[in-house]
Image 1: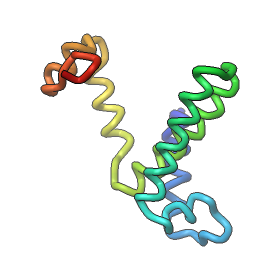
Image 2: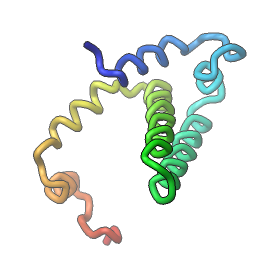
Image 3: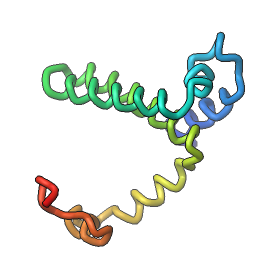
Length: 112
């Protein structure tokens, strides 16, 4: 059985080139990556707001919106979700500090 995100990504990919007047996803593709990226940022902010003051249900709803828009962004920028899944699999069981160090990223929460 396919993962729900894989199924959603297939649906999103199928909307590229569709009529933007009848498909919200197609209208996002028509507006381009800058608009899609801003929408991802907006949905991320809304998810954070709900995490701080909402309910599990509102956090879940905003998280779903965030994941949808992230998949649209990946599709628009040519990112294969399978590549993301493989990166996550390689990080599984590895300390976050160790993984960040491998990438040359500071482990200082303040970015120093």
